[in-house]
Image (cartoon, rainbow, N blue to C red; front, side):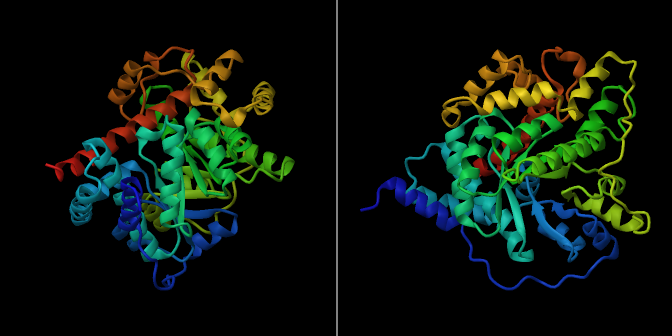
Length: 413
């Protein structure tokens, strides 16, 4: 006889699952995008909004990616209201012992799947679907929900996990299970170098638009090409790794793209995930005759070198030998596959790496108050910029997830 837990798991899978039917739809080709893909870049659309994606879809596009912010936008539109009502009704029958927070989490799981599956059904391409931010510091929950998401649609889902110590270790396990992973919220070459060697995710990211913005918002310079410099440096580091070690297969996604000029500047990157407005800008203003790969270019970043905070940015595009030796030492640790997130933090601190600061609840609250872009003068030099940017991004996603959760919660009253 099935237990209540088994019945609940079966019901949630049934509620989230949809059979993918029909053939991949025909789409018109675009000369500009065709040139971009010929330079070696795979092109994704960065949205959870089916209708927006349909207005710009071309045959050269290969995937879509969603996140907590984009999912919240879809849910707030009311498109998922009927699905939420139906899920609440059925969960109350089988999941009567779930408390309110558990109900919200499980309904959110179903909704996230449905948002992604709408995109899969429409385009028959892979879609990234992201875990709830509350799981970012819980290895066991990250593993459990990643497996549940993947089970819903193994042919098309790529599981998106945020770059935290627990995330590194969860991804290490999931990749051994051959699960496709989009390891998100990266902001430096060294973060992604560590990810490739420790966990070998399918994809890593640089959120380049936010790097440009953190410079301009903190009056450190124009911010021009800062994120692009980090992104291209990361691509070079990954190319070197893939050449040195055939077992490393990690590819780079240029994320947080803001306009068409950035798309052109990153031609030749492994993957570009492009929001609809940036794609529209690129299609309108891009020039296929001028389009070329910039991956090997030398980039001058728009940072005022006279500002004392400018030195924080050098570590974003450098992977020094000392850091590579640190990674070598980590990979030689006995019991690495049993390491906890706190264990990884402690290892970093013991070996003089500033990669993972132990943020307090008060510090997380400060980041949430700052929004997407931290105010750098308020943070000590002991906290590395890439680590600060990752945690800031995670808190901003958590804020949007809270809004999504609150809408779900309104259906439980």
